[in-house]
Length: 79
Image (cartoon, rainbow, N blue to C red; front, side, top):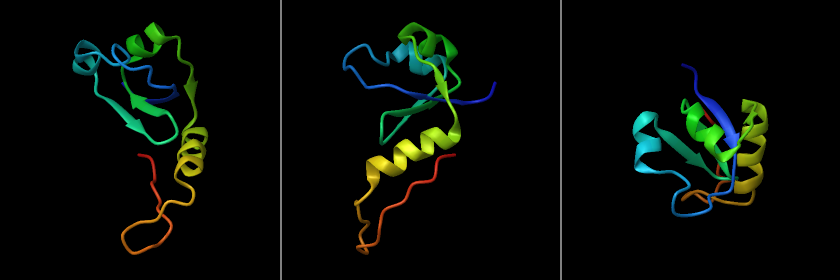
């Protein structure tokens, strides 16, 4: 199964359960971007898939102005 990108705000307890993550790992990124193969988790929350480009744009916007330890613009390229 291929990993898919989703946009969702973490609502706290129950957003990702141990059972959800055990079925398929769910990775979170800046900008409320989530990457997973767990379609059941996405369906449970009513999430719609977004493209990699949309996800990367959300991440770039979220970290804009952030700097790394060398004081350079921080970057994060999604898998």
